[in-house]
Image 1 (spheres, helix red, strand yellow):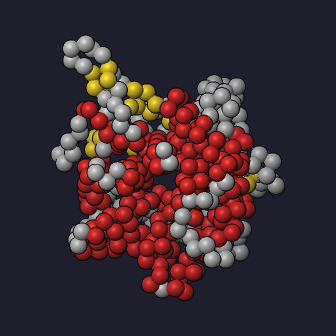
Image 2 (image 1 turned 180 degrees about the vertical axis):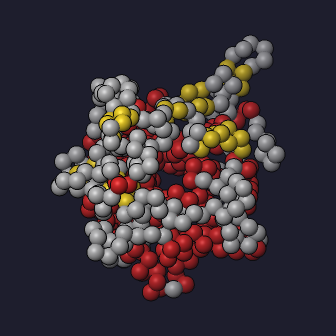
Image 3 (image 1 turned 180 degrees about the horizontal axis):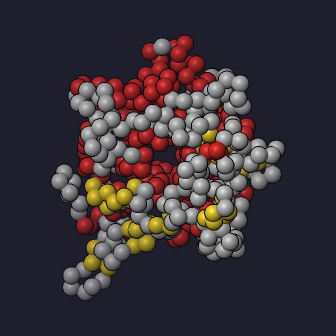
Length: 451
């Protein structure tokens, strides 16, 4: 790595004389940053050698944001900050007016909500460079964050008036009139941070923007929440008859919903609620509704926490006795998702749940007496179930769902069934995936703040 030198002692080492392993006493957040945060991680199965030169992507952005959170707790780790700053600088023009992809072209595609959340790093970078008196870079990050916020607020496709859920952001242009739980993290967190940082410059617009953010949560909660299971379905379509929504339930009471409760989707949703409420003005009329949704999610996930391991399954309402049925899913005469894989304890969702519980408790958003035992058990479960230590002291994280989605029409294999989430061609189980690395670092930072 060109700008960052890692010291082996920070992550453990092997004695040259005895072969005896000396385990590092460094906090787990630092150990994971130095094992797989700064170097050697995967973004949707694309390997990244170094964070500082990684391309703009929601996964690399998640890792970068997690590394920045670790730096905030351990500011002596200047290499962490420099790596994230390099990631941001490589992904923007010098004036911040364009976000760049790996080919040096504009990275923000029309109405693609996954393109936005890497911008969460801009706010800490803005504040830090202002402190240093580096006004050009501070303005660069403010301009870049404003570009993302304005693209979401003013240009992103929304469910049209006259349809259920009017005003809700499309997950992507290729998923018309669809909202996914994932999208609440991808869009609302950067929207909220921008309003907190810069919204005061226009109070009337600020109040309306917070109402817009709250609308996204209230809409998806209204249409995806199952009160019996105390969980939210992965996605919902306002037009279930559309070909791109072939996976959607056509009948009430959950019309338009997908079939299953996918853990990482719930994780993005849970984290989004905590991260938005951190900044949302408590006197805003919608604040109580958003906070009530947070507590609803926390209660539901407490119910489905695995009592033995303390972590959560890929499909939340089942244990490992649930298997893909071996028959697959028949769509328009073709069979997809054939397999017999079992439901499994999943790392990325378990990490992000742990993060959200711990942060929610720290901020006073969640009841400590009720949820601290859940969070404590979960964090110890992460270490036991998913973290593996190499002979050289570096850490690996295992049992992560690589990806999961629904449709569109051109990809009929993504059915949203249990068969899909357990045996789908893109829903493979991998290790050292950025979605688990980043969320483990975030959970560890929260855990270490209170210890």
